[in-house]
Structures are given as structure tokens and as C-alpha cells.
Amino acid sequence: MDFIPKNIQKAIEQFTKLPGIGPKTAERLVFHLLKKSEAEVAELGESILALKKAIRYCNICQHLTTEEICDICKSERRNKATVCIVEDSLDLMALEKANEYKGLYHVLHGIISPVDGIGPDELTIAELIKRAKKGGIKEMILALNPSMEGEATAAYISRYVKPLNIKITRLARGIPIGGNLEYADSQTLKRAMEGRVEY
Amino acid sequence: MDFIPKNIQKAIEQFTKLPGIGPKTAERLVFHLLKKSEAEVAELGESILALKKAIRYCNICQHLTTEEICDICKSERRNKATVCIVEDSLDLMALEKANEYKGLYHVLHGIISPVDGIGPDELTIAELIKRAKKGGIKEMILALNPSMEGEATAAYISRYVKPLNIKITRLARGIPIGGNLEYADSQTLKRAMEGRVEY
Image: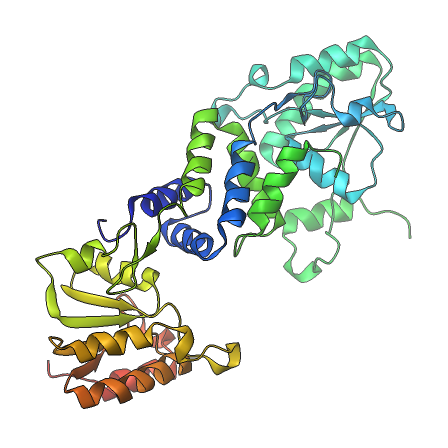
């Protein structure tokens, strides 16, 4: 590729390393940036460079934060007796945007998956059990994806937490809002039927 | 969004500004970067910052370069009597990767599109005509997209270039390699039939 300046080549290569971005998309993104002002391009570059600066995990819930304790754990308005267990911070963000839940979280940073060699020790389950044993938690909500790995992780956690007299719940499963019965898979329909509620 | 550190928020916002990247994809990309080493993230950030540095357009063909004249125009092995006219540097790159064409290029940096308010003066057509008038060019290949705008641009250019005794050609149109007759649109099939060649 001597038909394109080296710094453009380099940027295309770098974008190609991102998930879901192939060489064609990377080219398009880089050429889009070339048309933008230097200031706009700098803003993107700087924001990426700043990304890893001062980022750490909350001492309590393991969510991403810049301080020892994250804003959610610090907040006075949060119900500290409920802990919602999520796979990663992205799931936490999705739940926060839904603006329904007002308790605390626990971020596992992964899910038990023997196929990928991820066992309970790779996750923050030890920290979760420590939190549970400390007392003060009345309910733990398992907000894990409804997959084999999600089920296995949920089972593992509840085995340790249930004896501590903490109520364990999981998110409801059923037809998604805006979803269409006709296109729902049979597992979803089965779960929706099982979990039917009075109208 | 006080449930996520500011620099992560900022990076997500910046990614969302890129074409074809919505908020969900931006989140995914940023969280992917958060899992990478500081060095890897810095490499992406630096490559973006370096992007606009020293980038200019070739004095001859208007392709992106870091010098006055680009490597293609400078090359001794290129056939200087043929000029291939493309909409942008991305199209030039696509043709270079095909590794078939050995002449020079001319990058228009757009296409005539009255709907978008882009006339011939917004493009590098004046520079192209100057090149044509200078002499030495025997053939110009119109490698423009087969769209209304592409046709209009081709017609406009050929009106100025034809009187200069330069042969004007355009890329062949037909069924793409790996394409399927069954799924080809009728315009493509019509062109393929018109342009049939002896077997």
C-alpha cells in the first residue's frame, strides 16, 4: 500500500482492530475524519487517549469509576438493601438508562463459561459473597443474560447466597416491548406463557 | 449519565459522531478499548491525532499525500498517457488494490449533484481540464459510480475533454464477479446484455 500516506494507513489498521469494524468500514471512518476539521479529529483522538486515565473499579460494586467508590455506591438516594448483579458495566448502564431500579449493583466482569475457560475465580464472585456476608442486603437481583452461561452463573451465585437468608430474584422473561409474537422464538414464548400474570 | 465516569462518556459521544456508529456501537467500542492495554489504546488515539498532520492534496492528481506530488504521480513505472478519473481517494484505493491499472489518476473530491448544491466548481474539474490541455494524455477513463450524478459528471467532463482529441472511456458495467443473475437488478442485467462480448 504505497498509494496512500503512511499515517492514513496506520489509522485504518488501528480502526480495523476494533470489534465489528472491517477494512472497508475502517477506510470509510478514516476518510470521514480526513474531511473533518483538525479540532474535531483531535477531540476524538484525545478522548481515546484519556480513556484509560484514572479508570479503576469501585471497591464495593466493581463498576468502572475514577474514584475508590463509584457515584452509585456513594449516593444517599440509593436503596442499599438491594443489589442487582450484572455481567458488565454495559449492562449496568442499560439498566440505569431504563431509570427503574434504585438499588445498588454488583458487576461480575464476565460470566461463568467453561468453554472459554472462565470459572468463578475469574469473576468478582468472591467480592459479591463478601458483600453478602457483611449483612444489610435483603435482596439480590440476578440480571444476567438468559443464556446457558447466565443460568450457570446464576445457579453458582445463588448456592452461596441463599443460605445467608437473602432473597434472590431474577429479571422477568417474556415478549419484549415492541416485539411481535409471530417472530418470537419458541423458548421465549414458552417462558412468557409460564410467567403469565393476571391482567 | 452520572453513572459512568466522564472520560468514558466523552469517548462514547465522540464515537457516536462517526458515520454508521450509533450509541450502542459506540458503547461497545469504548468498553472494548477499556479492556485493552494502555499502549494499545494509545496507539489508536495517537494514530487519529496524527491523521490530519501533514496531509495535503497532490499538485497533479489531487490524491491525498504528504508531499507536493504523490507517489503515484512520481512513479517512473506508471503510464503517464492514461488518466483515470475517480470521485474520491477511496475509489482510487479500491482500484489500486485490484492491481490492474498502471496509469495515473485524477481525484475529483466529489461528484456533480445539484440536489446537494455541488456544481463543477466545487470539484477539481478545472485542474483536470488544465491537465488535459497541457498535452501528453491519450486516454481518460471515467471510473465514476453508475448513478445519475456519476453520469452527469461524466457528461460534463467529456464535453470539455473530447475536443482536445483525448479518447474517453468508462469502466465496463455488468454482472459483478461472484454475483448471481437471479439477484441482479434489471438495470444491471440490461447493461450486461447491451455490453455482451464474444466468448
